Image 1 (cartoon, rainbow, N blue to C red):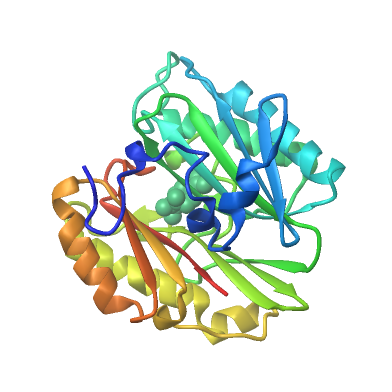
Image 2 (image 1 turned 135 degrees about the vertical axis):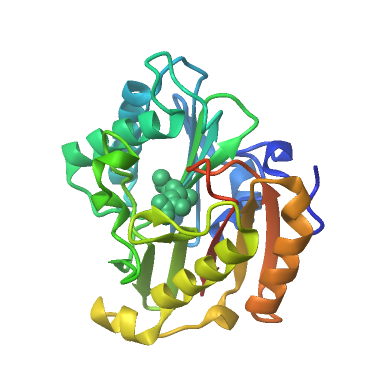
Length: 292
Ligand SMILES: C=C(O[C@@H]1C=C(C(=O)O)C=C[C@H]1O)C(=O)O
C-alpha cells in the first residue's frame, strides 16, 4: 500500500532508503552509497554526523541479540569519534507478534535495549520503534561529534523509561525528544509520539481522538516552557517542523491522517506517511519529526 505522500514502510529497502528523510538532514543519500561496513554495521559520515544501520536477523526471540547489537553500536560511535547519539529508529518485524517465550516482540526488544543502556548508562536518545514487513529488527542510528545534546521529556506523559511493569518487563529506553545545540544552530529530533497520556493509551479505536492527543503531545514537547524546563532556550510549535513522518496502522486511515497532518503542521512542513504497525496494538497512528 502506498501512502498518498510516501511509500509504505514495507516498500522501503531499509536501511538503504533515502536516509535524509529519516534524519531530516540532507546529504546522507549520497554519503551512504560510499559508506563503510564493519561486520554487520554499515555506516557513513556526512557534515559532522554519523549514520549507522544494522540488522538483527529473524529469530524466535530478540532480547540478547538486541543487547549485543546495541553494545556494538555504542562501541562504534565511540571508536569513530561520534559519541553523541541523537536519534535511533527501529523497524521490527511482527512487532505485535509473540516470541517463543510468549512475550510480545516489541517488549522483548525493549528488554535487550534496556540491558544495553544499563551497561553503559548512556543518555536516552530520541527514538522510534515501528513494525516492518521485513522479519528481524533493523536499527538506524544518528550520532554527532560536536554539540550539546539535551534529552527532553513531556509533562503530559510518564517518561517511557519509567513506564510501569504492565507495559513490559523492561521499559522502553528513549526520551520524547532530543535537542542538539551546535555552533550552526539547534536541531530538535522528536521521537515517535502517539496518543499516550501518563503511561496509558488514550482513545483506543478512535483515530480522530488519537490524532488530537498526538498533536497535543507534540505541542507540549516542543513548547518554549517545556524546553526551558530542560535548560533549552528555544520554543516551537507544530508549524515549525521541517518534516514529519506519520506511521499509520491501517492503510484505510492514510488519507484521513494526511489531511489531519496537513491541517496541524505548517505549509512548509514536509509530511510523509507510512503504513506500519505500532508498538502497542491499540495505537492507530504516531508521528515523528525534525525541527532544524
Ligand atoms: C509511541 C511510543 O513509543 C514508540 C516506541 C519507541 C521505542 O521503543 O523506541 C519510541 C517512540 C515510539 O515509536 C510511546 O511509548 O509513547
